[in-house]
Length: 342
Image (cartoon, rainbow, N blue to C red; front, top):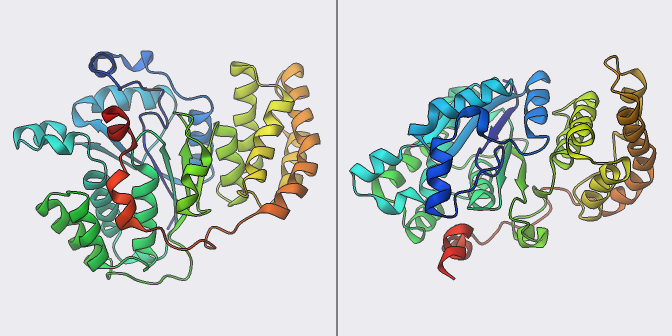
């Protein structure tokens, strides 16, 4: 079974604005070629796919936007294995207006159902999850990971869902998927290997410490590439391709690239390993970039060994932290909803 990578779209992959009605209308009518991708996201997604990672998309965008979103992904050269969008029209017809913004009642059941659909192999494969800080991704992903790891059982899921105001039939579906997975099971390795949260709204990374070191807030997609490279889900040349995009299209220099690594290291998210692979990959890269860009990549890799040594002293293993108090956190899991109320 291949490694699974699950991606949100809005504010994670795409640079989407939906904080006002005008934003929503503009987003709904954008053509595929007008939609903007976050710097480095498409390159990282393509490179992970090239490395054999299975790509699954779970987005809060409405089902009515499927054609435009699929066209955009095709324009970016993305190949996916599944693509789930939110049934907002169905929610409106059923007068479920709360469901239009709710993420817990949408994403958690969808994640559990997708895992259960894998059948007997579900207990063996691992996942890397990508989301953003605009809504509930860190909360939902962390809860999902702890359910799969056997730390959250049916009784606690029920209590969290009730406090999170999940519709009863939606909860029943989530619990049914959980039972198909064998309830709370204990696999040999963490089923959710890593949760990467794009800091689109520049939320302080410290806000996510409650979820433990498995959750990695990141500012740019080179940081995400460094993490999944250390996890063995991306080749060294894939990291360089993400860095190359930031240099050639977004004016990063070698120092800025290296500081992206240093920032993660200071926050305890990198082991400080596999840097020699990046150095070797630059030396043997067949599709050599333009000289100016290559100089910036060379400047980056020359700085990384010192930063890697510092990172190794601060690294925190993803499984080291205690389980979050989900019952307390559920009341504020939707960051955008509460932001708009203030």
